[in-house]
Image (spheres, one colour):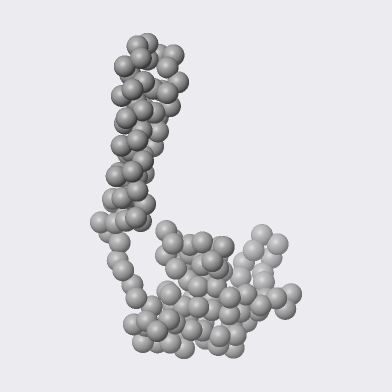
Length: 145
């Protein structure tokens, strides 16, 4: 989040400000696409920067390596589980702002993570889906060192 905020405020925003300044110097602003788009983009950047700033004020850094109860699923756990279709899945439970399915990271408030939370190896947990209940069996739990 810090990197995104830095990128917005130090790289992208100055470029847009320059474009808006140039476009404003061209005269009639009501029909100037560069000016109108630039102003809209500045509002989006400022809104996102405020959001990120507020999130960073309240963010708490949690190191999963310090987890003392390593036999249960908690925040930061890398969990392998099998579903009803005998498909094995591996996920890492992360914060809402860090979730990225391409890296197999799921938010701790996602239905799968909520179902797995506090489970132990060998436990079968119920996942409520729109198509009904799916049973997940926890195969392994690991925390980074």
